[in-house]
Amino acid sequence: MDSTQKNWLPPGSLVYIGDNFEKVKINIIDYNETFYSEIEVQNIEQCKDNTDENDTVTWVDIKGLNDTKVIEEVGKFFGIHRLWLEDVLNTNHQPKAEEVDDLFFMILKSVKMDAQPLTVEYEQVSLFLGKNFVISFHENSDDLFEPVKARIRQGKGRIRSSRADYLFYALVDSMVDNYVQTVNVFENKIEDLDVKLDIDTNDTLPKIIRNAKNELLYLRKAALPLRDSLSAICRSEHEDIGVRTKMYLRDSLEHSIQVVGQLDSCKELLGSLTESYNQSLNRKLNEILRVLTIFTSIFSPLTFIVGIYGMNFNNIPEFQWEFGYFFVLTLMSVIAAGMIVFYRRKKWL
Image 1 (tube, helix red, strand yellow):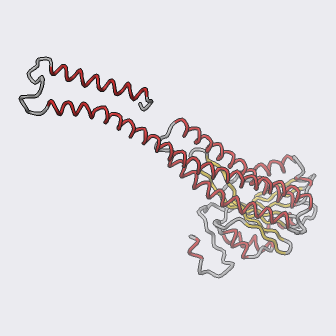
Image 2 (cartoon, rainbow, N blue to C red):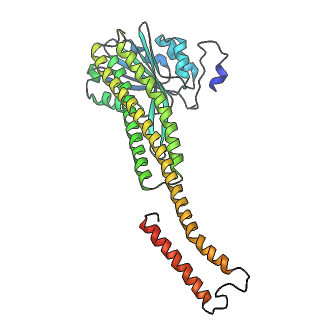
Image 3 (cartoon, rainbow, N blue to C red):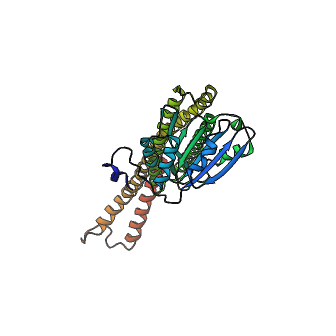
């Protein structure tokens, strides 16, 4: 459904706004320091045994949002407000962070860079943090959180020995890392454009620069709310986010601030590229006009001479001279050569 079609619906109406209509997949990972379990379920009720355990962390990873009944069942099971579920299903929603009672809610935009051409793919991700569980909603990517899942399976790092808030941080940090990687690639491509502009100016550069500006605009619109959301989390006093986890989240916040700074630098660089390209075109145009002016000035006296000898009068000097034609050609050649030498000495040519 288009976002404009739900304008007149009451608040909390669960309507999916997106274009992925594959079957919803629910993957449940349950773990602690000595235990690990991963299963795919068809019904959210099947995760009841996992979430009731107090000594394990449960991660419910849901891919696909088109089945609103499943999303509603998840909301009822975990006590998620319908307004939040409405935001989950609205894939055009701006990133944000909110907390109510024992739940913490965050919307982010995951980014993925396609260097050829210079485009960025976006996917909305919604995260819920509870006392001993984390729920993630996303539309498409099967491998979006694969690095985090691999760490859990292999028991690497502190994730298996930490609470659910650390898993929440790990998911957020993996997406922040994607921003860092994407912006670095973006920055390198813009620098390559700068080098290419110094070497050659072709007709494709304006289109490439314009597309880069558009992608930069959308990327910045996603990165700024991410920074603000992380800042809000670091200031939060939510009891399920521990002091140690906030230290890690502050590190992610610093990375997001760095990303925004790099995007601002890219914006300035693209502006200077546009200005440099226009200056280069002006220089080329001036060069063409200068050459045309020089050739016009060279041929002006030659045209004058030919014009005189082209007049139909019998009393023109040397009109009957048998060497007159060759003399005029020689005179014209000498004048043209002399003017070329003169322009070269003046470095006009």
